[in-house]
Image 1 (spheres, rainbow, N blue to C red):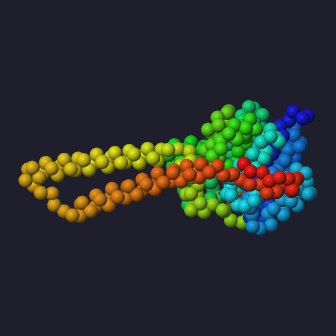
Image 2: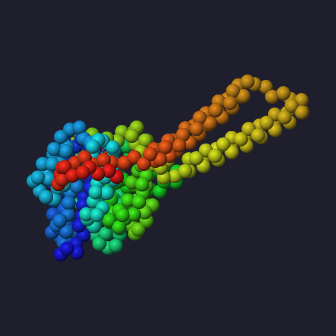
Image 3: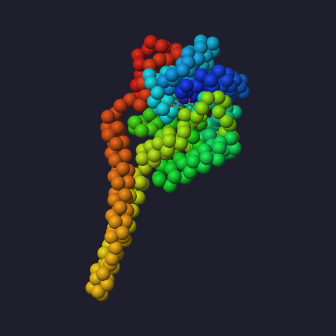
Length: 325
Ligand code: UDP
Ligand code: MG
């Protein structure tokens, strides 16, 4: 009986009071049905991570935990963003279970795909990626920007699984290796492939949000993409070096051409062309400085070794010493 894997479902929640009463029972049903099918231990848990919500999300989580021991929760001292919330939940789970599944709490990721994820784990995969097979419910704009996101990420050297976000199963063996990744700028979907281990994919259709609004407008998505690229790859700096070389080569050819023209007695006229070139090169230099500055900023943040999350409360031990990681 106890050889069955103990599962923790890790669910980040930020201002989700409208959503939790609907989705929380669905997670419980899933745990119960998986345990009844003999695939997981009935000691499995649903671990909500309150990401410093300003509404009643944490009270709701505490109420759930009082009603059924399968529900547990940890609370971050303030809002640190989705990636840190998932990481906090995973690190909490690391030595308390055999497998974790991270999933959003808004019902967009198909909870039923968990059956196939656990099957893949039982067949030997240690990482199972939930991949969105269709984006029917997303607007054209969301689909276009989201798919562009994966293409740009891969082109820039940040290896990510196409159309996979943060719905995934991980074994604790993987989590233990993961704990050695100490960076502050975390981008989980780029870090998991780096750990290695046998992996599998499970396809599902992405649904609409049950209630409330997305916390990822275009601005935040661009920031996430830029963070992901610069924390996983130095390709942009290399591309800048390449661009610099090309621009230098073109101007060198231009200079030779102007000298030859002067020797032949034809003067090269025009302030406009000179101004254009100066502006063009100036623009490239500013962009380059910006990209390099982004990396220097990241080095600065990493060098501080600040905690990535600070847990202020747990449903099972509200007064335990706070924990940072
Ligand atoms: N989330 C979080 N902290 C944040 C923003 C979001 O924990 O600062 C959670 C949110 O509650 C949800 C998940 O991350 O469970 C995904 O967020 P959302 O649904 O807003 O993003 P989208 O699905 O639109 O990309
Ligand atoms: Mg969502």
